[in-house]
Image 1 (cartoon, rainbow, N blue to C red):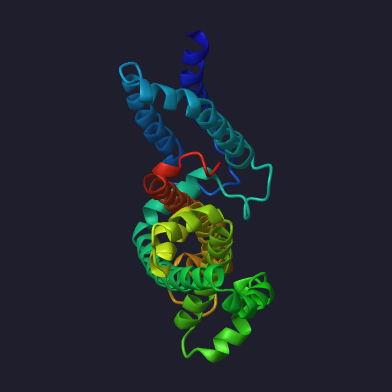
Image 2: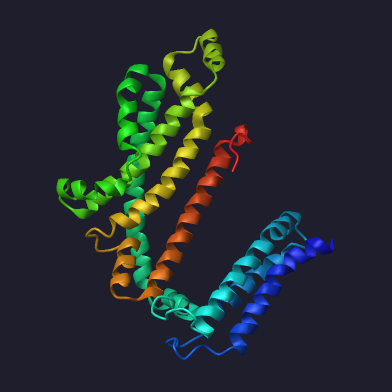
Length: 317
């Protein structure tokens, strides 16, 4: 009981120390001052949300288990932020230009919120279009390769040659082939998504137990039934692995592609702020990018759990 309670309150203790250090130790004169203590406000918001769930945990076992599991991790995260705050903000032990205070970093989310929202919307549109095209083509290609040996004979060498090459490496050729940088960015994202989904889909189909198809033949199933009712459902765990790999690859490609002539988006924002030597804005953009990627991955996990509920335990993460 004491151990469980200590896990729950570990985050609160770490948070109190972070607030205490931030209040008692003055900021270094080398760091440009902000109009408000934004990092402290962030800690207050984080602590307020946690306290709400902490109280609920005493009447809800599911929330209690979640708090016990995530409490020490959050405590460690706040401890790391506290160390960064002391090193960068309080004593300026690192170059101020490249390591701004956490107050300046969190201030960006307030001062540049309208521009950041526009960049997120722009990147979201680009990512959805490129991902959708790459996923549809990759899924179709994977099905064809998995079920047809003749197609596999011609396509497999292509995937082995083109697939391992990073999509961004094609940027000089792609920029000359497409009329706009936006179209080129869509192509590079689609290419980054196509390879892992193609490989994992075809691999999943080829690893389906042959007895499934034999039973389907015995029951009189036609070819389309065996593809869409037997092969694809059994291969879905591998398909989702490909989707997860494609998601991380698409974010990397997105940021790089937006640096080649795009006039909006998170990648464009990062490149612009870096050229202006505003590294607080760069770190804020990276944090935003990490949060968005994590949200999408979490959503994919929820979809996977819903669709593969009948195969629970097949995929281990």
